[in-house]
Image 1 (tube, rainbow, N blue to C red):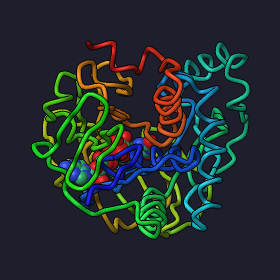
Image 2 (spheres, helix red, strand yellow):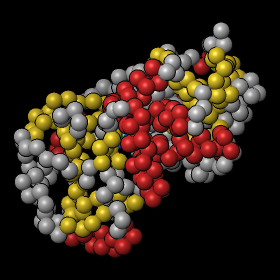
Image 3 (cartoon, rainbow, N blue to C red):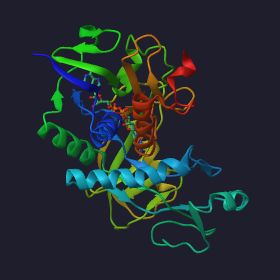
Image 4 (tube, helix red, strand yellow):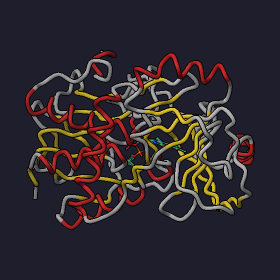
Length: 346
Ligand SMILES: Cc1cc2nc3c(=O)[nH]c(=O)nc-3n(C[C@H](O)[C@H](O)[C@H](O)COP(=O)(O)OP(=O)(O)OC[C@H]3O[C@@H](n4cnc5c(N)ncnc54)[C@H](O)[C@@H]3O)c2cc1C
């Protein structure tokens, strides 16, 4: 028997999960299809969100919108799903040189709402910071596994989640709907991460996938903030500390490597004083894009087809706001921000 729904979501990573919660808030009917892969980016991700990045203190694109949005979005879902996965946590970033400190002074006025200068080293037992550093606000992390699990459980209980491998060959596209197996949906939203790079419908999009690796360690001293210098380290809800990450556009597999571990440890030992034990290492592939902006929007020929993808290293902060933009477009035709709209490649 055919089940008629408004939306079919393919893939339940961070993108598909955020999409599902947006549809739930707007009382749309939908089903999520997912074939969980242990090394899917969302399962491996550190889950960090941080508004100020780069050597020269760059404010993340759309920061004024996406951080307040995410800080409201995830706690609301925690309430609804009765689970804990959102952890706002301050970040300390030491100045690495006088030039670095001066670069900050030049930008301090603009970035004032996101970071405060600290003259003293607040963590002398953990790191050397003779020039002080920055306390960055609106930072933290999403326990991505707990978020995905809470989302799956919530929608599975309501009969809106199916564990199934989506096969593009079996998709039938009509003018105003799609039919896939026993579902007839007005719209289908592709949220399959790097898998969509090889889709016959979306392979025109310039994906630029990046393998990433990170370590889970247990240091001999407990601490609370996120520390960020040549790499980041922070205490995670799973009782380990996450350290990372690497970027590799060549070897697009999910096998952890000795070289990546050595690279991360070298960067960690550059500034982190306590001794530690490595307890795990993971690798995944980020669905990054050539122009470093996500792919959001509607297929130019097949109107019932949509995509929500290309979140690169920033899915946690971008996905809540941009899934809202996509849904608003679907419902009211209100335009999607042009920097992320897939129209830019059509
Ligand atoms: C080491 C590492 C560290 C990272 N750290 C961070 C971080 O700190 N902060 C941050 O914001 N981002 C981080 N990222 C990036 C982040 O993980 C990704 O941007 C994000 O997870 C992408 O989510 P997604 O839902 O688009 O894709 P995915 O996570 O890949 O999810 C796609 C889903 O679709 C399913 N799927 C695929 N094909 C099919 C099919 N045919 N049928 C059914 N289901 C299918 C997959 O199993 C998966 O569940 C990191 C990534 C890595 C690898």
